[in-house]
Image 1 (cartoon, helix red, strand yellow):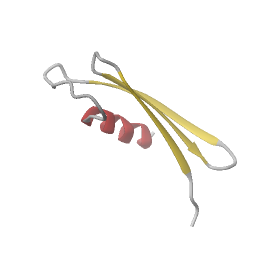
Image 2: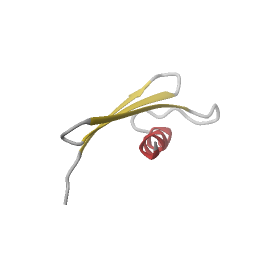
Image 3: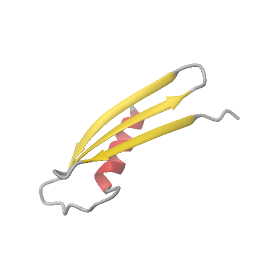
Image 4: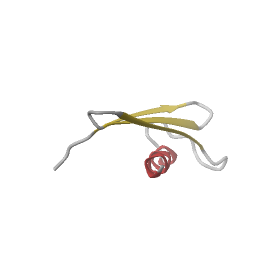
Length: 63
C-alpha cells in the first residue's frame, strides 16, 4: 500500500467565492490543482466550509 499526502487550502471570500489549492505530494514530485467556485445568488451565505467548497474540491480532484 502506498500512502500519499494531500494538502488542501480553501479560501472563502465574503462575496460567496471559494478558491481551492490542492497539492498531492508523491515523495518524488508535487502535483497541484486549483479552482474557483461561486455561490448561486439564491444561496444563503453560511460561514465555514460550505457545499460549493466541497463541490469545488471534488471538481479539482477530478482534474
